Amino acid sequence: MSMPDVVRNERSAEHAVDDCGNSCDHLPPDVSDAIGSRKANEPHDPRVRARMPVERYASDYNMNHKRRGLALIFNHENFDVLQLKARAGTNVDCENLTTALKDLDFEVRVHKDLKLRELQREIERVAQMDHSDADCILVTILSHGELGYLYAKDCQYKLDVVWSYFTANHCPTLAGKPKLFFVQACQGDQLDGGVLMSAQERTETDGSGGVSYKLPTHADFLFAFSTIPGFYSWRNTQKGSWFMQSLCHELNQRGRKYDLMTLLTFVTQRVAYDFESNTPDIPLMHQQKQIPCTMSMLTRLLRFGEKKAF
Image 1 (cartoon, one colour):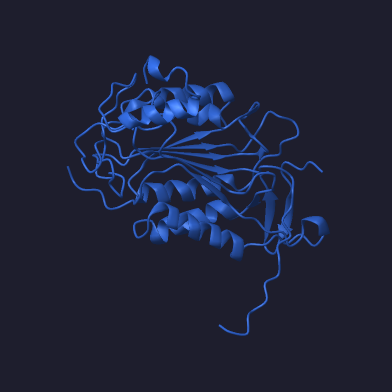
Image 2 (cartoon, rainbow, N blue to C red):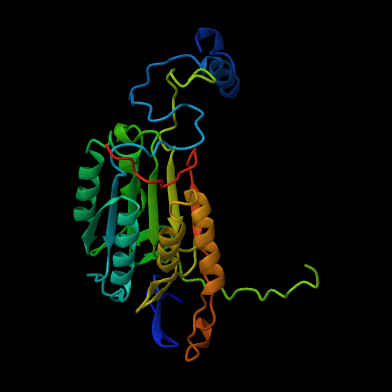
């Protein structure tokens, strides 16, 4: 069954799915690499150099730059692709997320119904900006999707079309800083009927922040998806998607209290426990569940504390 966007009644509102040198030459590669790693703590001159935003083993990201940073929201409601229906309720998600992010000191920029080339141009433009005085960057995509792909207004694309512009070698002023991606979209057409749970009867040089250190180019990314690969993502056409409702709630209520990974755990909890589809007219879609999925390459704790005045 292929249903990129199914809209059904749910109580008083409708629901939808969004959808080393020469002496090492004779050694096997792994042995050679191990020998080479003896120099891991020595200063080096990588091809791309970036300013260290925080000490090497700091527990938290430095969120005390002049600006919190940009938050880009790509809100897709209408599509040129014939089989894709309009995403009723997405503007609610967009408005709620905009408010939540502004309250956390982000500079929010919303882009509506962009074609792929327009989206790419905007991402490329932002990646080429100087983010030296920013804490991080955040990108949200609200759209249709299927396994491995998202949809722009005119065609599908892979998520790496977006995030690859922000790797440390391509965007040095964001190196060592959080790069956050939130995706509200289906990742397939599988359904999750859930499991009924019964109540139990009882109840730099090591230690030196002043010496250079090298980071993997893909470090400090986080991807939060509304659902796991292969499955539907549900959206209420009046209240917005389950995932965005939950994310905005947590950001509003506890956004400055907990670190981001803790917040996302509570987002997952809220989606898992508080939502269930109600489509009795179509039994296959009735009483279905959803679980968000987070993939983190963050290397420190991320907290959205109060911004200091400069």
